[in-house]
Amino acid sequence: MCIDVHKISELRTRPTSEFRFTLIALYNFNHLGVRALHSLLKSKGVHVDLIFFKNMLFNDAKRPTLEETNQLTELIKEKNPDLVGISVSCSTFYNIAKDITDSVKQKISSPVIWGGAHPTIDPDQCINHSDMVFIGEGEFGLLDLITKMSQNLDFSDIPGLWIKKNGGHVIKNAPTPLSNFLNLIPPNDYEDDKKYYIEKGNLKNGDPYSKNNELYTILTGRGCPFDCTYCINHLFKDIYTSRGFPVRRRSVSHVINELGQAKKMFPNLKRVTIFDDVFVLDKKWAKEFCDEYKEKINLPFSCLFHPSTIKEDIVSILKQGGLDYIDIGIESGSERIRREIFGRKDSNRVIKNAMDIMRRYNVRPYLDFILDNPFETVEDKRQTLDLLLSFPRPFMFYFYSLIYFPKTKMTQLALEKKIITEGDVEDKKGKVFDQFQVTFSYKRKKEELFWICLFSLSGKSFIPKFLIRSLSKIRLLSAKPTLLVMLTTISNYIRVIGIGLERLFSGELTYTMFKRYFKAAFTLNK
Image 1: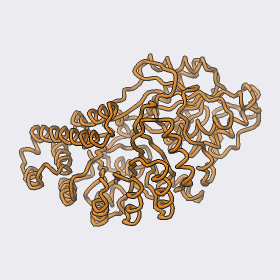
Image 2: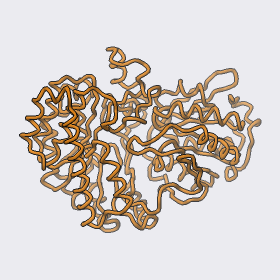
Image 3: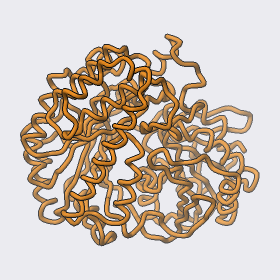
Image 4: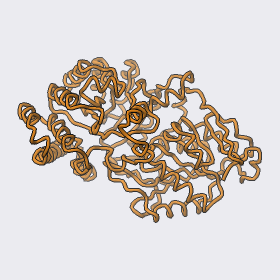
């Protein structure tokens, strides 16, 4: 179906309050972006049916079965929407969104709009399959679209909206300039009304986010100030050049209000994760937040930082508010790789200083590393191990396998150097399904597995550093790392048991949390 915006009387028109919009989230039961869209539209009186189509944790997701796709399209047909929206939040889900759209078009005549990260970075590809595409942040643009469609008004000039007209011509509107409208979006809604989820061949009514959940995830702001070449954030910044500063933050009162509602909604809540790309850089905001948080929420929380943004005064304030661990992106211990390949300018000295600050304030570090990196030499890997062995222990890991997202600078470099082919780019490869987080089961070179095991061992204080250094010099292990894999696996289980006991004595351990830790033991992120 194509849309002729000058003949929109052919579309069904209803008052905005009766306009039916079906919104689909792919592979994320707690999709914060989709939930923000849903909360805003619902607060404005729009009838929104929200469908969560499958979930993914620790590489455990499967591509949808024909039965699941049919369940989805039959549900959409039953809801009889005026507009269908699909959030394609990751390039991995491009082909799935395409298949869903094709299936929907066989059942109903309503237009389909795509939004999210992938349509934003490659709208030309996505408009080939959808009737409309929204580029960039779409909460108020989508509300404007629904309002105009419901009132039979021309919507061809809405900023950020691409429309495929009859005859194949595409209207391409530039995105609206960025502004700090975040306080205008209501807190995420976790009620069961008009919500559905599909997983493992089952269609169920209600919100899939369990009311017994112990962890609440929140965004206090949007945007990232850095330009890492493997991340699509630098593409977002290119799109919004001269259209406003990408980093914006909600007010403290707005954030605390959401967390207060979460405590009431989830009576078993044990902790909070702040999922901003880089958490607060403003000392004044941090102080106000921690004062309010300690008084009204008073749960342990974690956040994400870049090494260069970990400052002693900020960490000191956050620790007093309840901060207990920081997820810090290091990606590689080689300054060459970080600088020339990843576009990260921080030195090893800066990283060591960040680790020292966390140790002084008893804040546990989780270190992000990108592995399976063909740009790295053996010397680069040894520099990573040397850096890890210079850190005070213990520390934890998130090991990620390198993913080639479309159009990023690093992907373009890998294509130019013929390190990869177009088939390795994520909208075609779908590697996230198999190896977003590193596991032993993935087929890789034995030498790569050898180094991964050594990295994993380096964070465990019960493994002597001299032993790890000695193992790194045994060439036979590099060619046949089976024994090293066994040692790493055993050490992971010891670490998981230790964390479990720690959580048990602190009163945080529940059955759901135990299952999550047990499952995590099968990855190398410990």
